[in-house]
Structure formats: structure tokens, C-alpha cells
Image 1: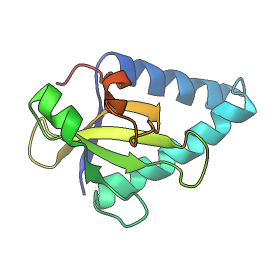
Image 2 (image 1 turned 180 degrees about the horizontal axis):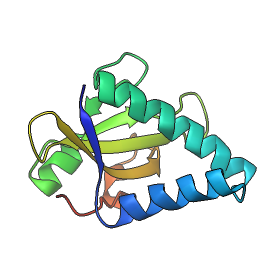
Image 3 (image 1 turned 45 degrees about the vertical axis):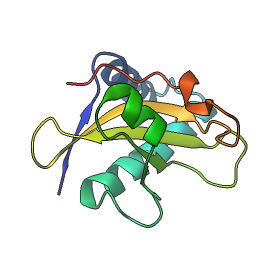
Image 4 (image 1 turned 30 degrees about the vertical axis):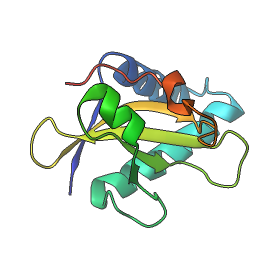
Length: 122
């Protein structure tokens, strides 16, 4: 089992607001879908970051930019602008930190990952 951390401050604030909205009944239909997709991915990631349905893979352009291996996991597939979860190992052994949740960039275009901004690493 891995311990999941939300990158601070953006990811933690985003996730906490989504949880609050879902539990208070204020979440939109889209928010509910996002909550289910992210929640499922976080459970899979915590149990096995290499789970086949996550299709986790390193993003070389982000690794080069941030100086630490940055991984991408699928939230969806075969969907326009399918969601992707960007993460790193750490800060400690057995920890994973979520840095961003973004639509999948068109990686066939040059510099597609330049638009991805990751939250501060802990």
C-alpha cells in the first residue's frame, strides 16, 4: 500500500472542495463524475501504481522540466480530453504525491506538455 498525498496547495484544496461538495449534495453532475473517476484512480494508485487500467507511464518532458520523475495515470480513456493524473514518488518511501489533474494534452503536437503546470512538490 502507498500513502497518497495531494500536492500543496492546489491539489489539496481542489480535492477537499470536491469531497465537501459531494458530501453536502452541492456537487454538479460533472463534479460527481470527476469525484468517482479520481477516487477510483487514487484507490488503484494506492494499491498498485502500475495497475494496468492506470496505464502509468513517465512523462519525459515533465521529468526534464521538474528534475524528478513525473508519472501520468489515466482517469479515462477513449474520451475527448480524457483526464490524466500526474504524480511523483515521494516525499518518503511508500508515498505518492498527486501534482495535477488535467485533460490529456495532444502529445502528437510539439511541446504538448508545456501547458501542464504541476502543483508545488512537497
